[in-house]
Length: 317
Image 1 (tube, rainbow, N blue to C red):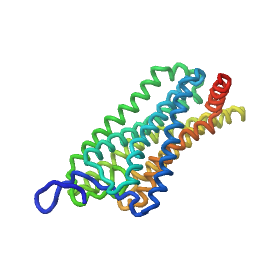
Image 2 (image 1 turned 45 degrees about the vertical axis):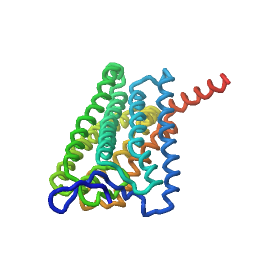
Image 3 (image 1 turned 30 degrees about the horizontal axis):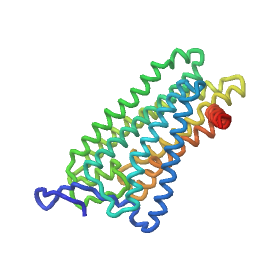
Image 4 (image 1 turned 180 degrees about the vertical axis):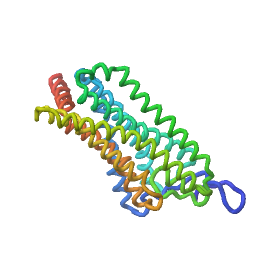
């Protein structure tokens, strides 16, 4: 049982939560530990390589790769906010976390998640300007503009999610304290409150709707304009080149938003512990791991830069 402090009546206030997580899998948790450890190391290492590669390659010092550095850094922090603790909990029982620790995890996780939503919209805008207004690209996407877009993404994430998480943790939590999840996600924690949370859940739904769908709509509008511009290009080679510059971003957006929309915008009755855990694994573990794969295997410039770095290193040796 979770530690608790006395409350009025027959209820007691939780000071710790217990994750149910993957306890039902028994010895298979050890297998999951090694699988998730490998994925985590690959994700952090892969995104770190992308950041170092772009920093060390002058030809990649452009707005598109500036945003990619931000995205790679976000993905490393994003997976780190969840997986290390999950790895520990795969080895120990009980899988406990203090209410303060839970709040800290939710602060970090939600801030990074919303920041990524906004950053993906900024990346879509960059591609929109590059393809639809190529002659004005240098002017419209100068260093100051890129910095402002990245800063706005971070500030939006910090302000909105700090407010939301603080509001969530003003609720009283009581009872067994068992969370049917493997980390402090929003809805599983809200369900631990010992008051009527229907109003809170409605507000959370509309906040998610506004701040997840707004960047998503900006992305859709950008790509609608991009598609129209590509289709009107007279050269087939030009159309292929224009589309290839967007394909990696489209894949990342599809993976990230597909799971986010399914998780946060589905009706309350559609949530079950198993589906919540499965979709959460997608956006906390799988999607960040695919980012370095997508941007290296599908990006010619990144692959060429990587090959040059390897070649220079071999020549030095």
